[in-house]
Image 1: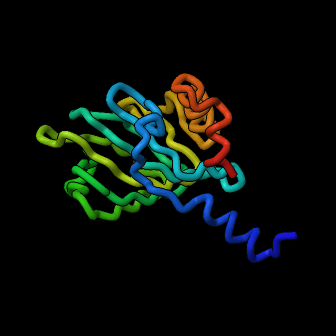
Image 2: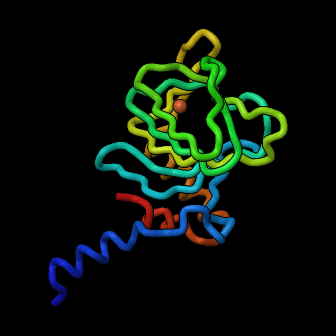
Length: 163
Ligand code: FE
């Protein structure tokens, strides 16, 4: 019978992984030329950690968070229209609850990859700040399941990221 320690180390090992994957199928399409790579989809706390990869320039989503978000830029650069800073490679970003911001990738950036730890949700907003849609850990799980089924990994593949 495995000891608690052995069971514990197995549990943790599940999450120790190469974040930027060698298998392109792990990138789940979010929009045109925008993908996310799930790392953990936590249904207990209602949060998730993923990499966001963008290979286009211009405005992406305007959104608001009801809970904190932490970001770390791995590659490329991006900014929020509402702020005067640019998140460059190596930048840590804290997004406080309640703030509306609009993600922009500027010309000259071929690819940006950022790790985001999102608590709660992204609430997508129109120009007047009215909610027009959302993503939470559950919509992320659905997107993953659909994509993994379509690329031959099987819908259940998402289960390895879910807690
Ligand atoms: Fe945000």
